[in-house]
Length: 351
Image (tube, rainbow, N blue to C red; front, side, top):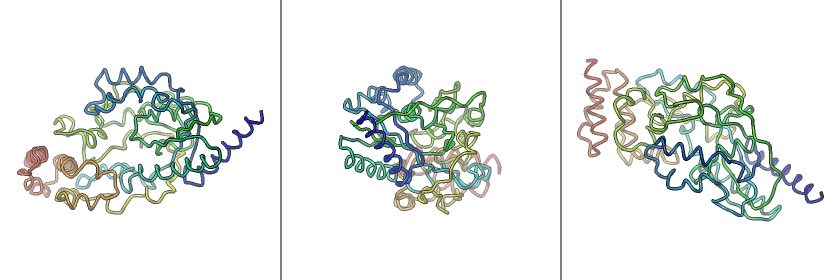
């Protein structure tokens, strides 16, 4: 009983520490509390829903079983940090001569911010109670959303993202694995009910069924992960979305409980709120790297970024953008050149 009281007190102090470091919620589960993940991941991969994301298959053993990633771990501390926007994220979608960038990518890269804070939490935990720790943010083969569900941060909604009754679905998650056995929380129940607003909001019908995502049709996947040309059928549905997509997230009614992001580095940069397509398509590699230094957008590179901008131009119907696309028809990158020719064709039809 005395040992239990010690760990109960540690958990309470850990919650206070996480709040002081800017996290909006903290819950705990065991690494083995996600028994459905192996079969769900197997089905996802067998159906080819992962598209070109071969790393999902290559690391499926670890992603299926967090305890296999680090067998000594006994607790997983799941933390959430809000990035809820102060504005309507969908207002930009109707401005066809401007670019829509996903809310999370309109300023600094959350991976860097969250990971630094996780390391502070991990260091504090070692100093207070000993044990060993490992921290993860998105890039490691960790099923973070199922673990978040198991820990009680929220539930995986019909759009497959975590939804919280406290934070809506605008929040980042990170995890601290530890060898300490800290008291766990109860898993969250599913509160989606009969609502299908997120599924109906998807421009590309990327959800074959509730709680299933075919990434090959997802705009976030197409604009970020997909290499090479996007098939014409889907590029026409991208609209002016050039990096990511917020449609299913923005549609969730639980966002009425969302807390505005306290971290100012998540607040949108003025130049990324509604950038003009004409200003983005002319960026060369050096200019692209300078503009997006410290941004998650930087990782897709200039060529894929400009490809996306050209698709948005082709969808814009704006005759004033015709020459910009024409100028890139001979681009050294064949994918960019093909996108430029497609955009020219689309815009020529309207001339």
